[in-house]
Amino acid sequence: MNEELKKLFEIKEIDSKDKIYKIDYPKHWLIRLGIPVVIFFLIWQASVGANLDILFLKLSASSIVLFVTSLLLIIETISLRQTKVTELRNINYFLLTIYIFGFIIFTFFSIALANF
Image (tube, rainbow, N blue to C red; front, side, top):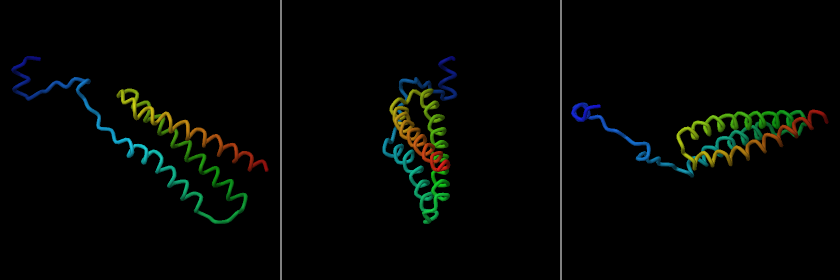
């Protein structure tokens, strides 16, 4: 584009190297860990009874929450991979390993309790 037109329309070229991402790591951790923890607290405090059926429902609901949270983190990790934000992407990989491990444990106990 012509330099005169750039000055006339006040068009500024931005290099991808000049972009500075302001990353708030504690906020990222708090949101990614805090929301599932609050949901787990609400699920496990919903009923106080010690019935096995209620325990099965709580384990099943917890595994569904972990599955949905893992899917959302996978989507976010893919978008972070495209924007080349490696720090947040690595945090999401770490959280994914925690959530997937928890999902496997909750699902295993749900199946074991259902067959009990």
